[in-house]
Length: 123
Image 1 (spheres, rainbow, N blue to C red):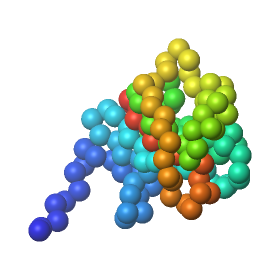
Image 2: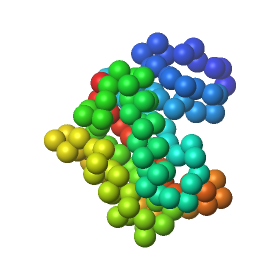
Image 3: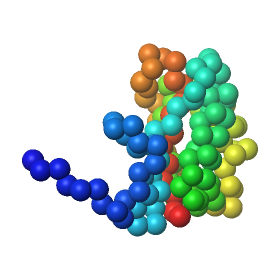
């Protein structure tokens, strides 16, 4: 298979060859899954870190959380749903809340990751 040249209409930010943390195309920003940098046993702390990273990634792409379209949240344990939502509710732009799904899932990181989020936003 012949490698296609990069499409200039697709912008990839923070790419490491395996994945790009941000892809921008046709006015839409796609974030890869974001996990906490510090693997504390506290889902609220991990959620706060994930949301801070999402803020930074959206800023790098030229947008912000008021432009979120959709967020998917994976929790290691659904028992952490209320604690995660407490942090989420303090962060989300309630006037511009995105469509959202939250599911329980085995996450990468051998149990150290308690929450992962993937987001889509408009520019």
